[in-house]
Image (tube, rainbow, N blue to C red; front, side):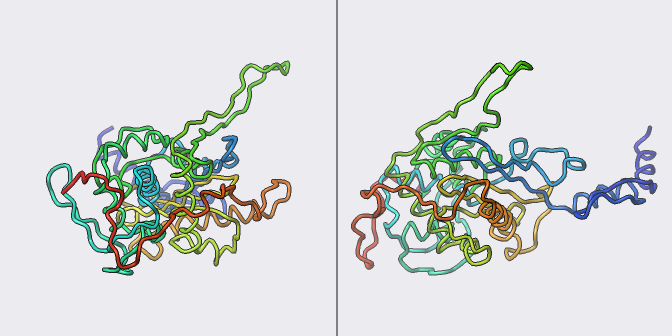
Length: 368
């Protein structure tokens, strides 16, 4: 069949069933119109796992497998935006930088790997020109603070750490990766965030605990695989800062809109052109991740109000945790707390004077 004939066939109305949020609809539509119609729906992926055992508790690969037969938890990969920042901050903590170290909140100009000047934009001018802490930078998801830290660290070292967190694909060691340019799966992100809930130990997900034959004999059993990624000191500093994202930062609506009082850490993420929204969160027992976006990257929101992780992905997590805490059979409680040894209760130690700009950690600059 010639291409022109195919095009004509795609323009002929035919009987078909299409997806809707209220259930399948029988209708008459051209194949072209059905493609446009189905692409208008935002897709999502969600995964939640036990922070200590690795057992996967919830897994949603898409909105309806009958119409969208693609697993976005482990099959799909999208840019992760600012949910990448905790990995960079973790490297900063390992290199001796403190959450309470201060820097001036101004635009950053770094020379990239091609010799060009890289000047990342910031989504807000809040506290522009003022002295801010590293912790505040993560709470508010400041690209300027992130770029400052990236200028103090090596992208090659960051790539090695990202692989330790469980990110599997090739990652180019470029400075822009600090803002979440790599394509990563939801499953890998959830795996990485177990490190923050588990005292620096990454735990890989377990989807099946054992396999039995028809006689009940165990053919295979599976136990959690654990890898130390962060020192306890760095892990508790990250826990402190990520809790601040929920209590005082970009994830605060989980408190006032969904009224979840549980102790938790989290990070929002939004990609360029508002194409992808992310929300990564963890309580003492559950680590969860959610992505929302179109089938194609060209499908996106027009602005930041709706097109951000806090608006796109956070609500799904909020509704999920409401259901979790409302079900007594699941045994999860909002009163659960992170066990933090006394020596780590103060993540900063002695804080510098407000009027002093601090040379963060004494690490050699990689870019000038």
